[in-house]
Image (cartoon, rainbow, N blue to C red):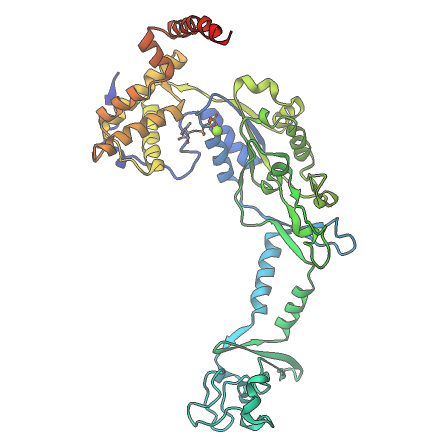
Length: 483
Ligand SMILES: Nc1ncnc2c1ncn2[C@@H]1O[C@H](COP(=O)(O)OP(=O)(O)OP(=O)(O)O)[C@@H](O)[C@H]1O
Ligand SMILES: [Mg+2]
């Protein structure tokens, strides 16, 4: 093998790792190209291939390339029929507008010295005798010593003061303010710690409109992950649920139905990727997935018939996701045919490669892979050039033994295992870098069970023979004991 092909470097610290997760995928050119189209055009994708060849990585990379979510989904209380909460979908501009409103409602915080005197006095900041400002919770003016509230002294004197709420200090002062156009507007001053909050008429109106809003629960927030894993999901995890309330949603002591609605994976993946590894393992849930993909919305209802949630249903909850499914070749017949056709009808299916040609570029790609895996692991040192060579040699050997080809293996999870083992060897030897010997020891330790068996017994077949013959010898003795 000619290693002069490789760009010479001292160790993997010098190897560049691209930021884009799609560029971090080694080999699989076909799948990577399709992944780009899938993300851009929002299509579905079925990845078929053996374990550890990058199916999950490709699915994640698609999510990374999707445009950011533009919708937020909330469940609203329905006063006419609480068991049928309604759905509200807000887009980004509505959300930013509301945030702006909420900020306006918060008004402006100012110093006590910048409000009219009578307001500062009523809120307890200003001494009515000398006009000095001080903290509102101090009764005696620190400047002149006078009671800041002298003019409204209680008829019972200070004796009973602790038993009465202090009527002399207000938390809020309502007043009016003259505008330029000779109109008056209501203005409210509120005490807030050492400062005063000013709410003008506009803020008050916004506050009022916010208060008038229907009670709601956001079930799919605008800031969310766009990669949702539905592998091995239960029905409720996939389709959502309405939680049980022991008080049956009683208006006083119970929890209102809309608050008990929980989104499923299909809803959380709205505008994102729903990733289903081993899609056939979803079994009959595949049918629901098919409906969700067709309708792009799916109702949420209580799934447990014994629960008070069972009577609650929310219709038309959006679930417009990109389905990325993975399957190994043997399980292909167990994918529900209409679902399979749905995926392909609006997307692609691709068989992942198990190896790639042994070229200069591909060896460079493997160098990148080694650097990536070391960085991802975070607990092992970088690898020397010689170590990288040894790992590439192992990639070549693996392509030969597993796929009987002259190339470089793309069963990279297993190769990544060797890198980690080699890294652990380096750590236990307190070495600065992973070197060739660490890799060799790792390869030896990381032999597959088949390799270990054939080393010990000559061949896997012979090993099997000796095991069964052992079993045969033992059987009669056991039977004797029983009888
Ligand atoms: N093509 C690849 N490029 C880069 N790294 C890879 C690739 N394939 C596998 N790996 C490495 O192997 C690990 C496992 O890959 P991944 O989880 O994507 O495999 P998979 O095909 O989904 O396997 P499974 O069928 O077992 O779910 C990754 O975290 C990565 O470290
Ligand atoms: Mg996977």
